[in-house]
Image 1 (cartoon, one colour):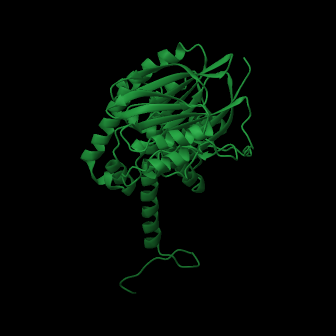
Image 2: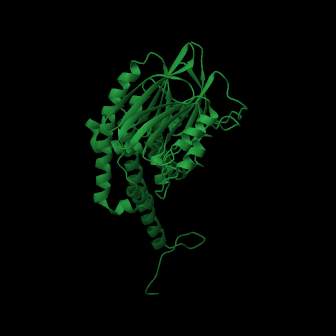
Image 3: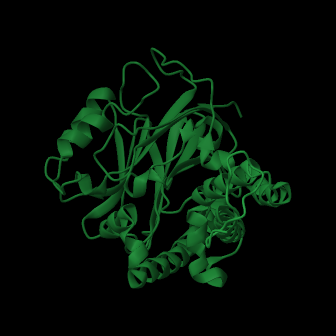
Length: 391
């Protein structure tokens, strides 16, 4: 008898029991790892669901989880697919139940719009186009001021008509009044419209919010928090008997620097626990600051006697408490007319949608466009077209 004998199964390939046991060990380990991953991601997704309804002052650093709700949703969906392939039906049902609540908010991040309106020769007389754009002080990715390039885009910022003229109302954030050749932008817009109305509100130092309108501005006001969030409103005379209020906003920074964005994009942040906690703490603290500003803004919005459009850089994603508060009585045009995955912030792999156009009753959404081909700022310009309905 051989000293090293092995017992073989009846398999036609003669697979040894040792190989079978080894395979079962690996299978068990993979099962446990995937189960742990599924549970962790599912818990994080549930926290993301809840975070939009609980004030950051009670939720602390967990508020950051809500910003990545759409990413968590995709990861949990991938886990579900694996369980389905493995025919683990009970686990599949449990994971599917976790995904169900997200279905009711999926259009905030991804929207399938099969019908896209063709570009018109001219804009309808009962329509208005609004552009919101954080111009980053007119600096490009290299930090150089390129006012002329910004001006060329802004002067052709209505993407819904073939003539590519300027939008009817242009809301700019981080407008640097100390930049050279700003008159170039003004002259380009004036060439499009015989009369251009301009209104500023101070943010900090040499930075302001600026609103251009081809309609007369008959009243204006602002909420300035000395660099901790700024809002501006202007009442425009759309027709002799119809006034529209436009809100131009720049909420306080999210707290993620360009260096942080690079570290996150490269995965370096995973090996730097101190920096990761620093980012989490900053995001939580700054969310609370934005919420104070939102509370003041909502009071002004609630007292508005006219139909209104609220736009700008909110520095918060659709998974946030701030977004939930802002859309309490307003509609988000992306959820109506957006196409594909919605993002407006170029860094961090284009994960984040933080620039919005919201609207009240009295408007019928027609078109939405976030132009990813414009790479002047770290934000995308966002344009929205509405039909102004009869009172």
